[in-house]
Amino acid sequence: MGYLGDSLLTAFELILNFDRDIRMTAWVSLYTSSCAIVIAALLGVPIGLWLGLNRFRGRQLLLALLNTLMALPTVVVGLLLFGLLSRQGPLGPLGLLFTPLAMIIGQTVLATPIVANLVLAAVTGADQRIIDTALTLGASRLQAAIQLLREIRFGVMAAVIAGFGRVIAEVGVAMMLGGNIRNSTRTMTTAIALETSKGEFAFGLALGILLLSIALLVNLFLNVLQQR
Amino acid sequence: MVNLLKLAIGLSLLILTPSTGFAGEHLRLATTTSTENSGLLAELLPPFEMANDCKVDVIAVGTGKAIKLGETGDVDVIMVHARNKEDQFVNAGYGVDRRDVMYNDFVILGPANDPAGIKGSKAAAETLSRIAANKSTFISRGDDSGTHSREKQLWQKAGIIPAGDWYLEAGRGMGEVIVMAGERQGYTMSDRGTYIAYSEKTPLKVVVEGDEGLFNPYGVIIVNPSRHAHIKFELAKKFLDYLTSHQAKVLITGLRKGGKQLFYVSE
Image 1 (cartoon, each protein chain N blue to C red):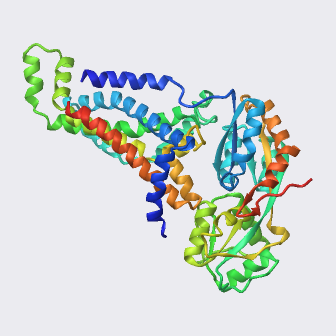
Image 2 (cartoon, rainbow over the protein chains, first blue to last red; image 1 turned 45 degrees about the horizontal axis):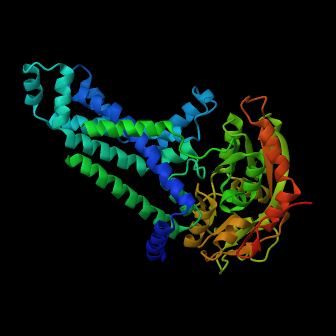
Image 3 (cartoon, rainbow over the protein chains, first blue to last red; image 1 turned 45 degrees about the vertical axis):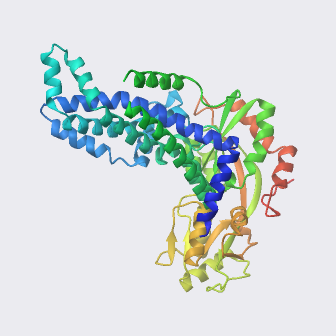
């Protein structure tokens, strides 16, 4: 297949022209993944903190469960949520299927275990004395936890970056829950899947290069935040 | 840390803003990948959308899945090409008002050297028998699509249950299956439209065409509103009227790929 060289050229043309359809897919990708990672962070960071700081019966089981959730195939998450959100399912009357919101929900489900697990790792690796010191200085448990968060912020940022990478690159959830509707729920990844199924390999790869460029920009931006 | 919070709040506000432009009502159409990939809908839908200030959301999946989406009421209209399944759909009460939209045909594709010696035959089922007898590689869609349904019917007509190392069930879309058949130098059955789109990229040639059994009609059906109250019945009815109108027929028959006509209509 001689499309490898072709695709680089096509990628340049894509970026230069940036026609409306491509703009929309890039926007939908960014929009859904950003919303999802924000919610996943709001959920995952407290979960990771709590699991890291508390000891209780059944904790090992919970940790094993969390690790397993990280191996969730995207298409399985898509299937489970499809069953929930379809008109036949319990949340059917909400009519969420094939909307960007459905994709955001799915991607949140994917990203939260990653964020939680990596925050947990960061907490476990942190110096226990930070919490102890804060508490002896009169901090409440919440304040002590926030102080710990400050210390491990690199780890937390890494957790968010990992979660973001997972959701912006996935196809299964976006395809099943979004339906790849043009100018509505078509993301860069589902667009690549579509072009590949049409045999447009060069175009598909070009979209892939574009996606990586956008992900690079986002990660550079997050890195800047991380350094502050 | 505070800046991160500001960022989070800013992004959360973004959640509340609608991300895509809305134009009135949305009509959900589940159709097959071959219909969507042919580029027909990109031509056909805009005049209808403008005239009715609506947007048609196209969900392109296999025929099997499109019909399931119709059964569960996740879409308002389905447009597929598996007449027996469409009839079952309507008879079971899942759909109303089925109409013919357009037709083309299926073709059997094969390698240029034609190992099973079927080139030029006009009897599709018989050529499948010869492929089976010769144990020539045959790639099936294997995905419950309209094309797959027709393929199964032809095997039935030939009185054969295809099985063995030579019969590969791909479970993928038409384009991917054409690529696979090209790589494995085997036979496959395809709709003419997708083949035309791939004719430059594939070494496969049309070996069998013109059999009645390869006739490929497309139908459109509204999902039954008595089963699902939220179905946009009025708009769907207008859509069906549009698809069978003269204006649509001109657009359908006007579609060309590589200079060849893809779809035909009955007058």
